[in-house]
Length: 277
Length: 300
Image 1: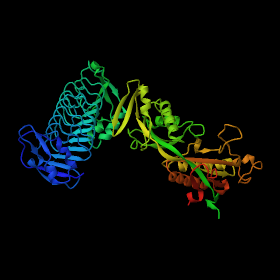
Image 2: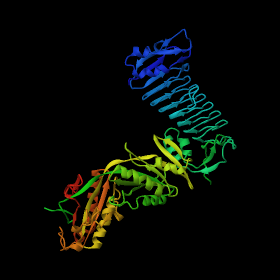
Image 3: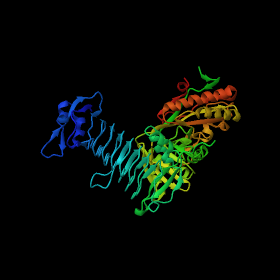
Image 4: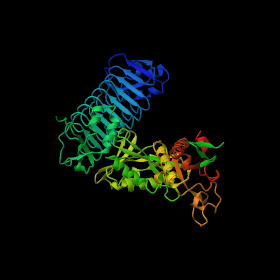
């Protein structure tokens, strides 16, 4: 696959559906990239990549977008194999249904990043919006594979309806982490809002900071020392070393959501015990 | 001129080995003792494919840095004549010997395309409470048990391997050959990719194919039984009081050759010509196995 550098010429003033931009990997010439159509929210106008971006061949097989593209939605839709790098903010639906490869964002993303993604990895250096790794509108299952790592904060309902895969949140996140989760793993290093795991049937939510957990929906906590958390910690050691280190310690485990007959689990890491003098 | 190692003559013959299928498993536990206990149980009654189904033994002990879950562990190697037999034996032994052992977890220790089920079969013990997790590209099963959870990788790989590498130590006394044998197995023990599946790494019951009794696939190899001297044709003289055989299974022919070299060297150096009359190897005339380990080439 050939790499490309796309540099934003002028700031966006209109929302564009950039899902067609995922075909950039099949392009051999600049004019082919420039002629990719971007569907706009204005039915009377159609745009192509060349209207907004200066296109240059890349030195490797990465596709790099330079500039604030927060009005560019569904970027990396169905992405496979190679790396998409965005140096700036991005709109909604980043990496929706992506299958493999990597999407790196050096900035923030709006809502619904990793919608129904199936594989690969999304790394977001800044903050992200609501419904991270959630389902496409009208669907009942969220991400079913791959990994999302957010260095900043996340909005509400991260991992809503998640089926498989891993979400790692280093910062704080809003309400409803892991709601209606079916399987998969969410690791949150910061504070979380209310309704953690509400409606979850299976899956694992691992929290560094103890939230208010509804003990009607979830069982009373039990202290556990589980081997699989050490495996996850090893996998995440290079990504989030501090969180990974804490995952080697025993945790408190809540089972539920009992209101839906769920067998999911919320694991809360224990704080490191200070050495006594 | 006869090859000699530490003054011990080495016969110009070859060890005949066979194609086998193998897998490596890693057992971890809360302490090395528990991991070792599980490994010993799992590799019990696994000396020979003739009647045990598989040949298996502990390959090495692993530090906390070397195991997937950062707990002390043990690596075991298991060999069978067919992939089907391995698929039958491994889940059965894992279920009865590792799942049952306190604090243990079970992981695949080898890569390959063809798979043998582990957790994929044992998960049903969870009776619906088992949990599947995909971590780092591998699938694991978490099965609730009375001490917490039994974590088990979904499957392991099986690879082509070689079984039946061997050498024979012909001693002037039982004491001497037993000492030489121990030295050989201790030298082989640290080597990766090989096991010596018999008790203490050696066997006294070297066998030939078939028997005068119908239905028996193997019987004693009378041409290597010193007590039958004068009754049957033997290639050694009356100075040989006892013969012990080191049998080696390995993941590659090179690993077996290295193990044979290390073992023969150590045995000869341990007791010298005063203890060993010579070193030989077992074969079936080259008709059964396609791997022939010529002693003079192995020791070159």
